[in-house]
Image 1 (cartoon, one colour):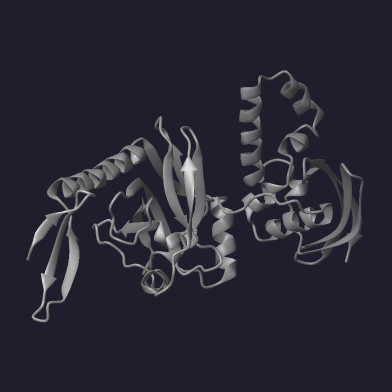
Image 2: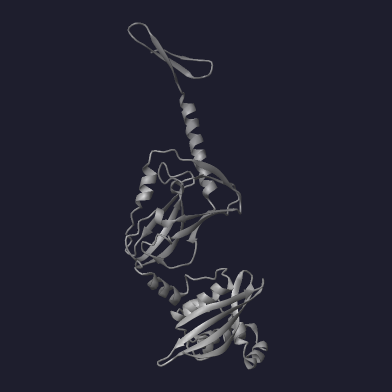
Length: 345
């Protein structure tokens, strides 16, 4: 082999076979190799600097009770990246979130749960990974909502520790450059067999129910149905406790002289008295049956008339309840009521 130096300062070499045919190639000089290695190291260093000062935080997207195998209400997590550094943070976000995010879910005995079949199938499929590049300026945030059930197979009810791992350059060649999140505690309750059982738990905890923009007649129907099932939190959901408390003139006079803090304490006590059925019994009596016979409302005020029947040992008492409602933002609330006795059956 003969070696010569060309004008581009590359070392040129060739091989020659027994027929005199030559194949030329270039040999990169050692200085060039060292220079390329330095570029790689600088690139890695700059990536580490970009990731430094970037906070990765997860939280439950909605505060609720989670049940084992509940496909209608999966464990949804909001994952948020915050650039707390003084430099631009650049990363790649894949259309398939499984190439950016991973989760480590462990039991109290530190046993790591397996990935779901969906995650394994998605990560091992022979398909192109489509992504877009995102630049996060100092102080900016980027967040997405992901479903934990798509990543992890939860085998049974219990307490689990959940931590997420974010891969800015996609998780294609191992965990290099990954950012870890905070740790959440996840409580998975046993599977629900009957919907009635779910409703009972919701009423006891009050964590799953929230006001919806229902029309006045549906608000009253919801309230009476909850009272029939003794679901107190659902019963209170559309009651304006302050307006009901002020129905009694003596209470209203003293209430208006109170501080804001004392008013809150009074309303909390009033709610507890309603629950123990020691005040305002008329609105607490449980009807055996009821029928909404008339509904009328303007944009801000409503009236719903209901015929309610109360079963006693030897007779059925019939009353006409008229519920008055007011619209607060987009929610209708019961603020007052009137009762007319219609006799017995």
